[in-house]
Length: 344
Image 1 (cartoon, helix red, strand yellow):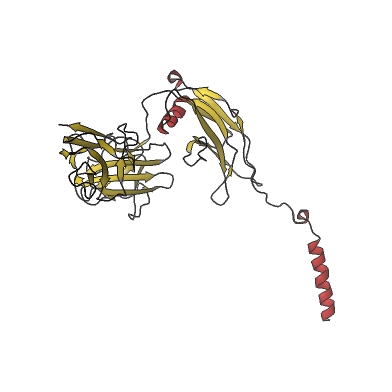
Image 2: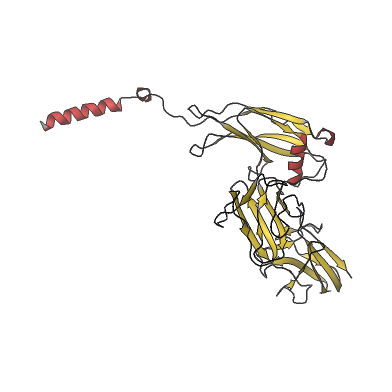
C-alpha cells in the first residue's frame, strides 16, 4: 500500500516539474519603462524673456508597460546633468504621454538652481511612471538638453504664514517662506513677538488651501489645527510638501569670531529690529574674522563663500579688515540670506 502511494506521488511530481510557465497562464512581468521620444537628447535651447509665456518644447514619451492593465501617471523631472536627480524638480504630472514646458517656468527653475543667465547649461530630463504605492515606479533613460537661461528677477515658490502675530492675514507677503530650489521644500525665518504664537501655512493669499498640524506631531494636515510655537523670538520654519511634514525651531543669533571681544569662545547676541525686520548688533571689532551662529552652537551657522554678501550654511569665515566700531545686520526675510557690515 505504501509503495503504491509513493509511486503515485513520484509520478505527480514528475508531471509538475514538466510544466512550463504557459501551463499556468500569464506570468506578471517587470514593468517596461517609458522612453522620451521628443525632444532629442543633445538638443539646444536659448531662452528669451519675450517668449516667457510660450512653449519651449513638448516632451513626448512611449507608454510604460507594467504587465497588467492599469491607469499610469507620468512625472516629468529635471536636474542638473551629472547630479543623478538628487535635486530633481517636477515639471508636471499627467496621465497622457506628452507635456508642454513653458519658457518662463524652465528659466525660473534654472535660476533657482543658481545657474547664471546667458550661459549654456546641460540639463537632464526623465519620466517616472507610477501606478500606485504597491507597485515600483519605472523610470526612463535620461536625456540631456543644453539650455541657456536669461537673467531676470527670480520668482521663488512661496508659502504664506498667517498667524496670531500678523492678524491671520494670508495675503501678507512680508510673512512668507520660500522654496529656493523649487523642489517642494520651503524654508524661512519669521519673528514671533509673543510666546505661544499660533500660525498655519497657506498656498497663496487665501485660506482655500491651508495646512495645520492635528496632534502637533510634525505632520501637516489639510485644514488642520493651528501650530503653536514656543517662546517669543526668531523662528526657523521648514516645510516639505512632498512628505507633508514641517518643523519650527526657536533661534537666538549671535556673532562670533576672532574679530569679536570674546574671540571664538562665546557669542555676541544680536537683537531684533522690528522696523527693518533684521537682526542687528553694534560693537567694537578688531581685524579678524566672524561668523553668525544660532543658540550658542554650531548646528546652525552662516558664513560667506566667496565674500559676495550672500550667506551659506557652514560657509567660510567673513573678513573684518580693520579695527573699528561696526553695525552688522543679519537679513533673513528674503529667499537668499544676506548681511551688511557698516563701519561707524
